[in-house]
Amino acid sequence: MIVVVGIGEDGLAGLTLRARQAIAETQVLAGGARHLGLVQDFAGARVDWSQGIEAGLDAIAEHVDAGRSVVVLASGDPLYFGVAKNVIQRFGANAVRVLPAPGAVSLTCAAMGWSQPDVQVLTVHGRPLQRVHLYLIPGVRLVVLSQDGDTPSQMAELLTERGFGLSRMTVLEHLGGAAERRLDGVAGVWAHARAADLNTVAIEAIADATARPLSRLAGLPDDAFDHDGQLTKRAVRAVTLSSLAPLPGETLWDLGAGAGSISIEWLRADERCLAVAVERDPLRAERIKANAARLGVPRLKVIVGDSLEALDGLRGAPDAVFVGGGVSSLSLLDAAWKRLRPGGRLAANAVTDAGASALEQFQGRHGGERFVIAIEDKAPITHFVNVKPMEPKA
Image (tube, rainbow, N blue to C red):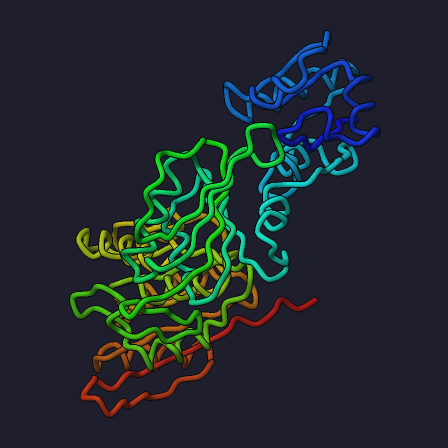
């Protein structure tokens, strides 16, 4: 049995009797250098993450195979952005017991007097800071798990640039330990020196007159995207996304992505959604990456290349495919259709006669909806098709 013990800055003194007993009785102690340093009096074998998590898990596996008991030390609640997920994925839930302790989120909310269900939590530890853009809404309370001591000043700069310089920020260092310290201030005039590397940032978002909060519903304003004209316009985009119907955890392939608006709004629908944008023009591909970062979804994967050729290199079966560029190619439509998982959705837009003709032929083969969208803002008429594969029969 592997026991994952959540441990705070107060070390052994803050652990339950059950957790202390697990540490006292184990033969192997694993964890990061900081956590291992909190348990000085231990005579057994030690495993750290200095060579990476996978290498550490390999070392743990050797001890487990030899019949030795293992305790893994982790921060606070080990299943909240913690290493327990990796341990369970490797060894299985039946082989792992988790003993959580108060984590950074609960300690931060306690320090701030905030109700946990009323805050938005995100981590930028090992993840892009631009993820914060997705949550910048007036009045929201954010608890941000930092990368290091530079995160607070970087966060203050980001907030100010987005028109949230009035936001109140609190940096909490070494929560729960003897070195705990609190720094308060306003983002636009943040003047504190570099924080301790172990810190959490609490933010109460306050917008100024320059702020532009954006809804997470489909159909962002066109000028929310940097583009060169190759953009699915707002009204058409809203209809397209409603047909693609993103669900948590689903994957979209956006073929001929242009400015990336479809895949970006797909990702904004839910944090668990995934998307791949394929664009042949390198300049547009870089623009897609910039749009994704600015709109809070830097996890968008961008591939530079021809859509039909890119399909050969993409693995798995997507839940949805959007064909934006190259829609006049029946070979592309057919290839994308074949890659969809059973029950998946394919949507495509056309603004030329050739594209409309291809969609008409494609619909004749596979069924689905096809209709014309006419917007009275002098934009071109768009021919739209949405099709859904049949579920496999028993």
